[in-house]
Length: 225
Image 1 (cartoon, rainbow, N blue to C red):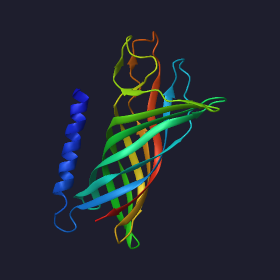
Image 2 (image 1 turned 30 degrees about the vertical axis):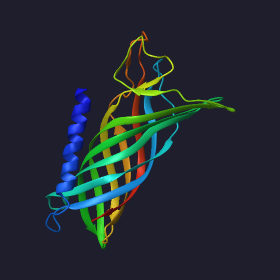
Image 3 (image 1 turned 120 degrees about the vertical axis):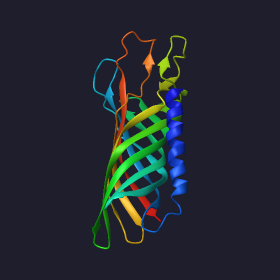
């Protein structure tokens, strides 16, 4: 509950900044909208300690951000995104797909240098996100199965064996490069590395060594006002 309250506080603070930033003096602060495609997977290890070998899952992201100048050519750029992450695993007989929907708050420091008639952009910083929905599918031949997905930090011995569990809270690092045209249209290549294990502690398992971390990259297209 404490982590959820912390995330909501960050979300409200960022949303408040977005609202206040819509009428600053020209050239001081800009407002942006963006969306794009995600290519995500889970990195980590399974219950036996072996490295995970998942495939990329195609998802998407969409949201808003603001660019607040902090020094010449440098900007603090917080935002709010809806982002779909997860992983896919194509086995010899069964294909599993894990999709997790997050509300994400990136907090980036961005360099914007003049290049031609526009600006080259390089940004990096942390992100914090909170899972709001999940979907898991197992498919083999003509058969398919979709277990329920539940977000919790601790799985107890009385919890269902048929449910897939994940932690709601995630955090990690962002990095991106891109180009913003003179008219405000911009595009960028993003990369993310999750720092937190999103698999909960499981009291049903004697040796719980599972580690799964969100990792991936993406492409974004947006417009800055």
